[in-house]
Length: 471
Image 1 (cartoon, rainbow, N blue to C red):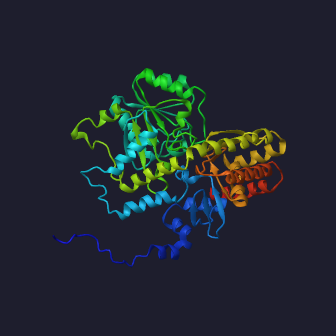
Image 2: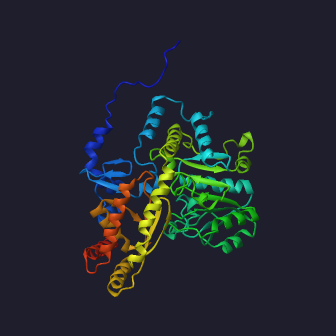
Image 3: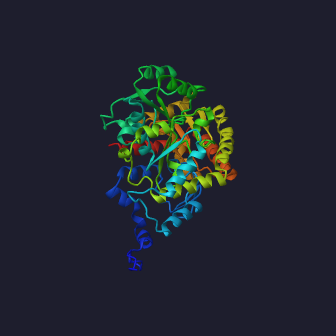
């Protein structure tokens, strides 16, 4: 037999470890020169330029070895924590197997297995379409909804965030992300979140293919009113509109259920997943839907590739998804998210009674928002007004920065110019982590109520830096 052709597997001179070691001190300079200088400026302004070197589970470590508790989890990507050994082993297995990845005219066992596994978690739906990200999943949902119904319009909510590619951006309820990028995809109609009357008015023309909604809005951790999502389901059924649940941030156990919409016993026609499904290593998105929707698009052999994405079913992404679901189940992370979420909410909710700057606390599971607002007392109100006059939402940095600098807790504001700090930790946080969070917030929020004080001195410095950066 002829000798098998392939790559020469002898050692190569390329040494990535050495390259990283040599050039690591230049990380901020490289980004300033060749990438997003404004990001580097922002990191330096708020003191976040500590050059993280390592991540393990819920923790980050800077160049000095100091440990931080990450309550952002990479926009919610690291649901099971950073560098989980089960996911790493799955990826190493795929790489070692020399699999015939992405053969154009073939299908793989890995993608079929992941689809099967997902449908075990979402048993009321029937088919899965894979994409590379959350925004790609949204784009696919728009096409599937229009293709299945023959209708042109898509309805979305104010304050929604569904992604930043053009279809998803056209469904974005935040002007911050839309300004300067119009025009948008036609047929996209905005209605207020939690407003069933406005939704019915939009759907009653019977020209709406789908209503897309986050069960809990990520920008601000905005909660649905009791009965809202059930009412949405009823209206969509009444007017022949598909209900699309964007669970890209809320799904895969984040809220103490696999899907957030399960809390309200509602079954959508499509579910969108991404972020945490990846295990944090290889991007993945998924649209889970009813059979009728799927088969109305892929309805003939000559339409078998009418929609797709080059890397969507790559072996590494599929393996990462399978490993992530295994970890979620074997480590009982959904149950842990529910338990730790209740523990943290029980701590945070009384803060609104004890501290006048805390206006509201809301959330489910490990998706929690702490909203701050204008205080009543004269000194605090004057200090708040002065800071907010420089930039709306600036006050929250007086909470974020001390949490990071003094307590090694990483958080950020939930939305541009907003006053809600969002907690989105990994699902494996433990009792000691909760104690860490509670102590840090209690200290920082108490300090913020002392005028004059160190926090408000920081506010003065921050306001000056923001003015300089805006010139």
